[in-house]
Length: 258
Image 1 (cartoon, rainbow, N blue to C red):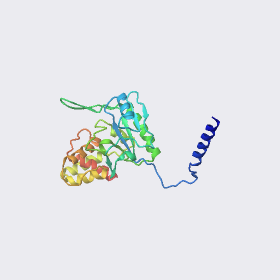
Image 2 (image 1 turned 45 degrees about the vertical axis):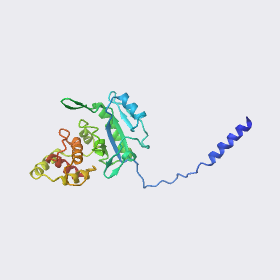
Image 3 (image 1 turned 180 degrees about the vertical axis):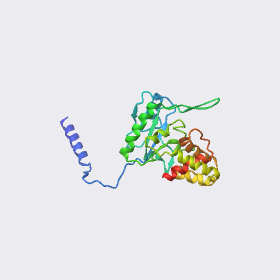
């Protein structure tokens, strides 16, 4: 027994000796957070099912926010990668799991009924909790304005969350995302209605926003999906994917600010 303990002690000492000695006195000024974006989602189901999916399913997120009470759960450390974005692109960057924080909001999303699609609203207290979390994340990771986006922004060909009832305007009022001035939009809309820009112009403006959209001058289904994603965010009353004067004005005002 004594011989066994002596051997074990020698192994432990050898293991410790193999650990590299790292001097951490000097720190480079040339660095920032690995986080470039915060991506917002809804879960499409209730809390218990959401929790099961995000902790033991094939997907994950850094944070889950329940509806009632509006509790914030941290499921993945911010320094680790969560599997929430999938195939995605924004501002030319792809596969955003590696460079983003994913936040899931417990919300049923939508149901397709006989008379059309019905969307489920978000609880006000849940959005209050989200805004508090976002302000903290933006401050700690020193994120610039425009870093908070939706799943529909980064994957408009396959995703619609957080949907048209998500209150993006509240995030704008909180200073978390760019939000267009209504008066400026109205003035530009009158001018643009007289001569609506062509499809290539819309594709170019959407690309400036950050969307992945082919610059082919054709109003194909992929372009319509991107237009609908933008409209769902900034004009949720109508997101038909049609290039109209109001959509053009929204794009122009936002991109001028950029």
